[in-house]
Length: 192
Image (cartoon, helix red, strand yellow):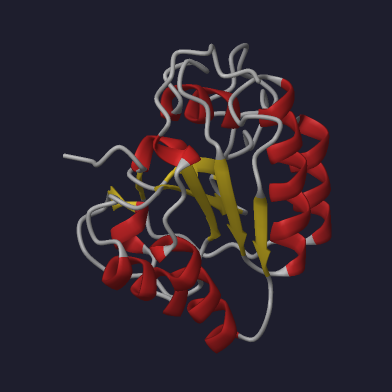
């Protein structure tokens, strides 16, 4: 069960090179095991302080409860550019061939729509955590989320890109911060 804050605050984390072994598919928030993800599990183990999504070179933008396989793919300038160019409709992972009429994979638009009840409960506070390439793509997606009503246009957007110890600290501070507007469940259609 989530508290009233979780549907209205969004934390987007970059993936982690360090991953836990286990079954073939497990939720991303359990698979990723880098310092930021361990901090997240410690500070907000039940996702009561914010909804969590991730950005990955393999899977693109997805909700952190999405099950993923163990993989090894690094974010590159080319992948980041392809994500920005593809917007909210490009499916990840990208198909290996062009033979399919309908590409496999999932696209960012379906995840953000699900997380906001199709824009009926837009996010009002956002935090982006990751390296420079990841933040570039995250910023672009947040702009698109705002255009489509998934993030309220007036929402504060906190960016965290620093040495890992500082990133862990700033992410924890953001998660533990209480915002009155974040629990505002007024049915305003998400636009103010």
